[in-house]
Image 1 (cartoon, rainbow, N blue to C red):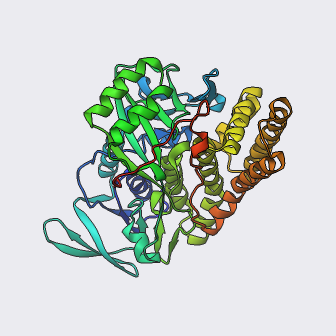
Image 2 (image 1 turned 120 degrees about the vertical axis):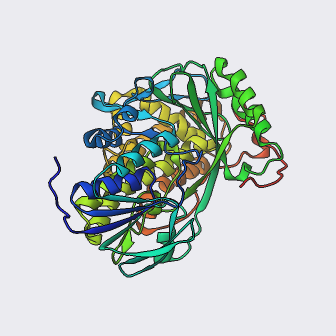
Image 3 (image 1 turned 45 degrees about the vertical axis):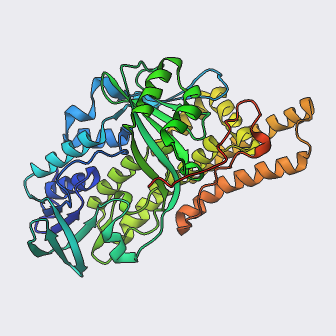
Length: 466
C-alpha cells in the first residue's frame, strides 16, 4: 500500500500512452487528483515500445498494472542473442540474476496500462482532448466535440511523445535528426532459434531485431539507414538485401510478408534528453528526448521517468537524477547502432572486437547487458567496455596487417579506428550537452561492393518515404 504523499495536489498529464498512463496511476495512488488528457481514444497501429527490460516489468508487476500482459509465458524475455553476419555461432546475452523482460504488441500495452489508469480512483480521463495552450499553472484544452475548457493545476506533465506539443511550448520547435526508417514485419508460425530471447541479426544494410509477440506471431524490426530510405520499391529492397541474413525457415515468410505490403513503418530519430521541464511543467518519456531503439531501452527509461518524478517532483532534483540515469543508455544506443550498422573497415573491425569481447568472458556479457537494460548507468562501466573493445579491435587489426598486408596504410587505419572509438566516448558529452549530431553510419563505397560479407547498396534513389 502506497502512502498518500500528494493529497490535495492537482496534476494534469498530457498523453495517455504507457508512460503517461503509468504516471497518472502513480500520482493518483499518492492522493493527487489527476486529469489524464489524450488527443485520440483509439490505439493506433504503430511500431515501437514492444520490449520491456526487467526494470520496467518489475515496476508494472509491483503496481499490479496489467499483470496478464506483463508476464505472458509465450514472450518471456530472457535477454538477447546476437546472430553475427559471418555465420559464426550466436552469442547469448542473458539478463543477469535470472531476471526477465517481456515483449507485447504495442496496442495491447497501451490499452492495458491506460485501462489501469482509468480504473484508478482519483484519475479523470479526458479522451479526444488536446491542450491548446499552457499559461502558468493553467492548461487550456479543446475536445473533438468542439467543447473547450481549462484546468488549473499544481503540476503539468508532458507525456505526449516525440512530437510533444508541451515541449514545443516550453522550448520551441527542435528538429530531430533522422537516423533510419524501421519496418515492422510480422511472421506467422515461425520458430525462433533461441526461444525466449530477442534476436539481433546483423549483416544487412542495417541490423534487425526479432522477438515473439504471441504463440504464433514474431515481430521482425528491420532497420533501414536514413541514406537508404529513398526507394521506388522499399518492400522489394527489404526482400533483396535483408533476407540472406535471416534464419533459413524465416526467409520465405519474410519475402511473402514484404510482397504483401502489410508493413508498419516508423522513423528512428535522435534528440538528446537534455531538458526535463520548466516552471510547473515536467516532461517524461519521448517528450524529453529519444535515441535509436537498438537497445530497446526507450520504454524502460520512460517508466523510470515516471517513477522518479513522483518521488522527486522538484525540477532540479528530477532532472539531476534522470540525467545521471539516462546519459549512458543514450550513449550506448548511439554507439552500438554505429558499430552494428557501420559499413566501412574500421566499423567492421570494431564489430568483430565486440563479438570477441562478448565471447571471451561471461563478465563482459553481464556488464554489457546491465548497461543495455539500464541497470548500470556508470560512466566508467561504459568507457571500460569500449576501452576493452578498442584494445581487442586494435590487436586484431595488427594481427591482420601482419598476416595479410590487407591494409595499405596501417597508420591511417589505426587512426580511423581510434577516431571511431573517440566518437563513442564523445556520445556521453553529447548526451549531457544536448548535441544533436547524427549518428555516423558509414556508407558502402563503390570499391567495397564486391567484398565478401558486404551488401551492395543501390546507386539510385527514388522518393522519400515519410
